[in-house]
Length: 182
Image 1 (tube, rainbow, N blue to C red):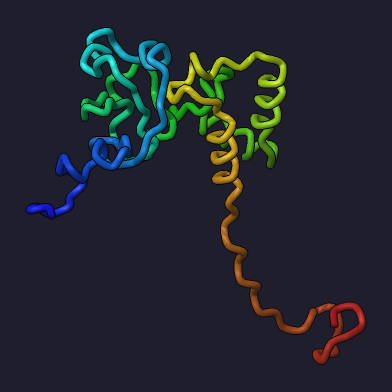
Image 2: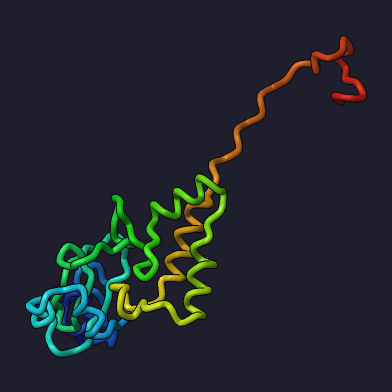
């Protein structure tokens, strides 16, 4: 029997005790990132503070933590050498670090063409072996999921305006309707 509350901060009930390796700030469950990937984006000193164990990436968009260790040590997004598009609220918001796509470039293409080619383009480059996400993406994973999410968010259309009430068609004197205007 426990003699304390079961808060996520308590050692017996927290991430290590439950086997969950959650972010020490927001408690989101992060995915492991290779030490090689993390070391490309943070200083040697920051790598030392993370320790020798596993490094995880915090996926929560509003959380300032980029990487963390099971010990509770965290590296904030502002300590990285690149911007984390999923955690940024202002431009530039990079999404694809391999091929230079950002939320802003996707939005510009959507506005200009009514479509976005980035997902198809990146899929082709992945198939051709040109993708280097494990090295260039701070999350250490392929950006296609984030690209798809970004495109879907751009495609949200505003609600249709209510039709304005119309009187008779105006092209004929019969206000009950005619064959051409119903």
